[in-house]
Image 1: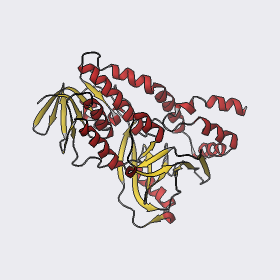
Image 2: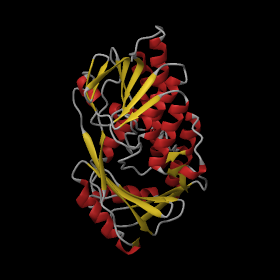
Image 3: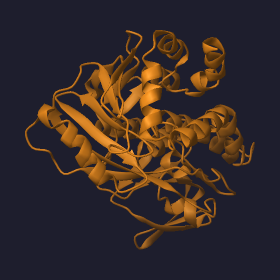
Image 4: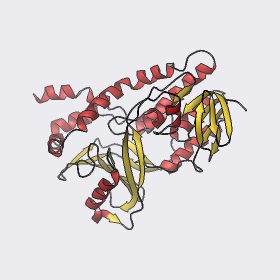
Length: 365
């Protein structure tokens, strides 16, 4: 049986793409290698309220575990800076349930989802699944950062990764605030986090090195706040390179395309937005109105500026030593600087602040 689109991977981007494409009347199948949607997972699960509204995703209350109003930033020596505008900026979500929610939406729109089917490779518009071949008109790589579709389609020439580790444990948290920890002992080149998630806290780190020793360091700092047993960490990687997102018969979405925020590596808003753009492009392609390469242009128009500013800022930040991080956090505690940050910051669009930082320098001079 032929399909209009074969989606490899049933994560958020794959399911959101499928629902949007199936809604337009196209025949879509999602092939997910794991036997349960949403598992395994390693994610802080924080989504911006504005981003979800922009995407038209009305989250059930049962999926929202915490409402975040700000962040507590901790310097390498433990000094704290609070950033908040006194309103809800983001939600902490039940990530596996969120994935299932998007999968259910896709099915309601007419998409077919098959679980427990591992894609062994792609050739042209054919996907090798188990002992059979599934054929379609378009192959969609939604198979994560180590995407077999990206590699075998020739869209990806090189790939680099950042490594993450996280535990969910009972711990004392600050209600409505995420905690961010900076310093080489916690997460060299990135940061650690404590995010309240209902009755538990998500505690994690990201780094280009093995993240597990650094996660142990962070857990050691938080030892007095942790209650009960610490479970085995979940680990994952995030692609820090972005392959060409579209080819002759192939498009990439989500982590397979490297569609994450350069500064925080959060992928839900960017990945889902690009998945929606991909669905629009693929629909036009199937109608004979446009080539798939138009997807790359749509992504560039939407996020080109975000990627450029974010890549530059992250490259600068990731090289900072503890001394400079300490000084930057001290500066951020100053009222004039803090107010400037809060006035221009946007949870899902970091360039709105980054582009205005030269104005801050001018004000300080």
